[in-house]
Image 1 (cartoon, rainbow, N blue to C red):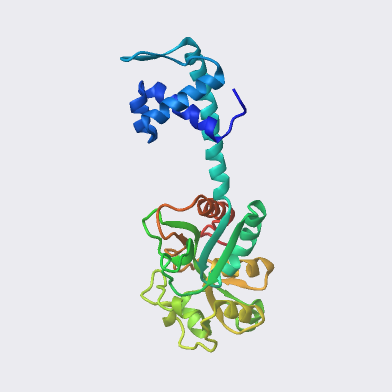
Image 2 (image 1 turned 60 degrees about the vertical axis):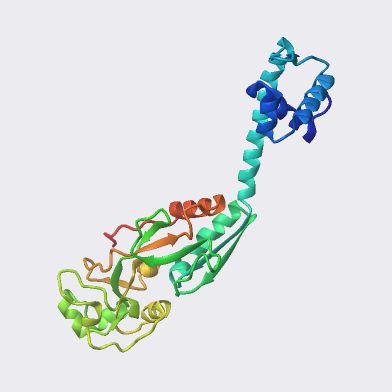
Length: 302
């Protein structure tokens, strides 16, 4: 047989179809060809192989012994080709763009290192991030996924990646000057800092909300990163903030935990939302990668 090309592969597929269907007519229907076209291809294949593949009469058609041996090899060749096509399809999925939207400062704290490592592994996948605290319409704005802080949905379209416990921290110098509170009631003597979205968070074992802890809110901002930096740089007051946002400053000693047993808002999570249940292979790979890489902090934080 001559060197294989697309036509010769098609001939093998026609031959396989004829063997499985038992007639030219049925094979023609299965492969969406005409009966004369099927007959012509089989004749061309026999001429190329210099063997007779079928014993044909007006009423029946049977494989010859040579045809049976060739069918075994033919099925093996086609199986390899189909597997190669499948693998090529998977590789193709690891190319293209992943477009996402994410809220600050959550994404800014969590994603850069992970995305850098992912991009090194898959250099043919480009990443586009649109930072916004607004809830975007993922389908209309053509996002592959979104990072949000929310109560998780019971849906395969929602992937939990990180708890969002809110804790109390302060600058060590501030605590040295005014003293460290030992219970919730003593917080009323301090300036309390938090972003507005946390104002309604309930205090465990009380009927109070975070906004009820102190009437004095000297420093107010809608930007959580600014409040963190203000506290780190000696700002007066006690800051309530998500653990993932202050964790590095706690480890470095720039901030100190206040009331270590007090944990607020343990129900919300850092989540990934998908616009549909059928997502591309590259988005699946990316979300799975993040799920493995992002540290899932325990609530018993020190």
